[in-house]
Length: 110
Image (cartoon, rainbow, N blue to C red; front, side, top):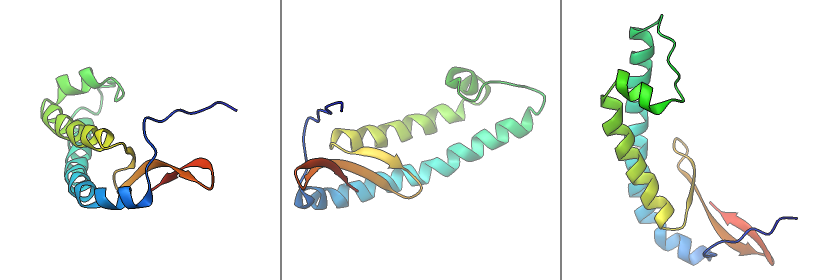
């Protein structure tokens, strides 16, 4: 079994202390995510015969520069979550995992 190294393991109390900050950051992400999806949908609908690669971010931004601002805001919120030690798992559900020792094994606190 591969050993996973974490910079830090969190206690439940430490994660609880982060909840207010996490709520703020997740609200920011949750506000931006629908805007991002809306812009992608509009782009796809406005260019139905154009087959650009949605996974090619540079090409998508070239087609819809508004996405760059939204993506940068989302990246900043996600970066702040990661700086706290969390791993962003689901924006819509507001899930962030923090590594912790649980019963002598490394697990995650959500």
